[in-house]
Image 1 (tube, rainbow, N blue to C red):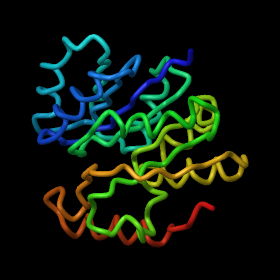
Image 2 (cartoon, rainbow, N blue to C red; image 1 turned 60 degrees about the vertical axis):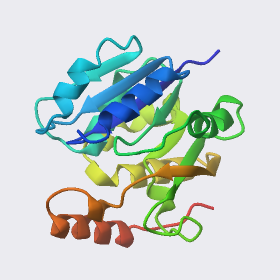
Image 3 (cartoon, rainbow, N blue to C red; image 1 turned 120 degrees about the horizontal axis):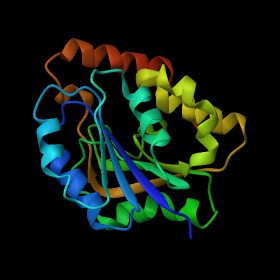
Length: 210
């Protein structure tokens, strides 16, 4: 039976990190890897208090190097053949959300599954940014060859992974994660101008997966 590793990349997520980690550790993941990417708030303290959880593996790079670097670090330290990436700022996570993500990969119906939270600012039925979702499951072997590119991709890491899978003609599937709440970037952080800049950057790279 294939092992499944969940990877959470967190940067200053003290409000939600405990709920996300404890929820994942309740279920069927062989390991839950959290990469705290140089967090400066209470994220590190909370994760330190959760290290009693047997499936938790906590990695804390000393400085913030971006989401792509954190994701690559999580993959390198994983043991599972299937990787499930889960964002650290989610709420209302349920067991069926995880099953929806990795079951098609586990059963060889898809090479990568992208999960779209339904409770978002943009109507999920018409969301042009669904391919950028942080909720995804894939085969470790399919991304191991692009780890170096991932390290320097920062917030473009999802685009990199998508393009890589398209180039390799991998089977990509979308699922709707009913009831899952994911806050828009405008609700997070202290700098709205920085959030807007990221949002504009995403639109310039927007593409659809068929």
